[in-house]
Length: 121
Image 1 (tube, rainbow, N blue to C red):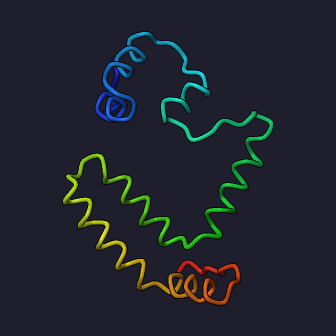
Image 2 (image 1 turned 135 degrees about the vertical axis):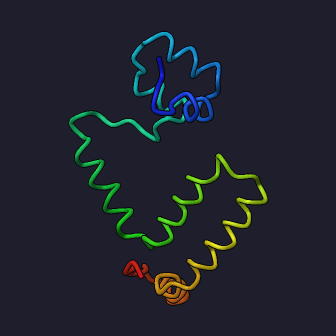
């Protein structure tokens, strides 16, 4: 019996038919199938997991972290929002991102044709 809201979220992620079949079957979901269903973004070998996670973390840390956080917020809110609500939230968060030091650094770096040096501000 599903709990913790998985019946709500999983049916929205992979569709109600697929979610129902998976939940009642009790079968383990292979990693490749999780990627195909959109539940995971990629698969790596267990022996490569620490390196892959480190590379992902380093890549995210090198980005304008405030913009990454605002983007995450947008995608977290999207499933429950109407299009009008989502457009309003996007406009608000874009204005917030454009007011950051990292935004200004990104523009300078682009104009100077150099890699940006984001500071998380």
